Amino acid sequence: MSDLERYIEKRKNGDKHFAKKYDEGYEEFKVGIILRNLREEAGLAQDELASALHTHKSVISRIETK
Image 1 (cartoon, rainbow, N blue to C red):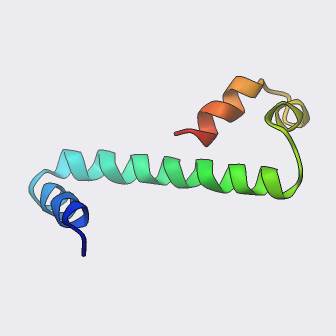
Image 2 (image 1 turned 135 degrees about the vertical axis):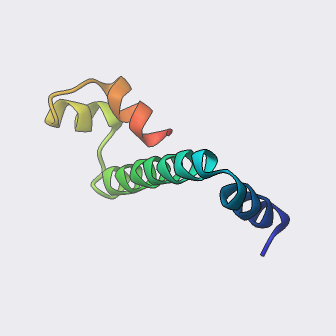
């Protein structure tokens, strides 16, 4: 386990608010990574995906960079 992983575990164990926010943020991050990977595998640009989903490119960009 790295120093960073030990630090995060220590913070999560000692601060339930931190733990909740960390876990929520990590889940959002994973969704963004999955979306970007699937979009790229499909050969779509952000604006093309946004158009297909009836939204804006900025929305896709925000999700992918969370």
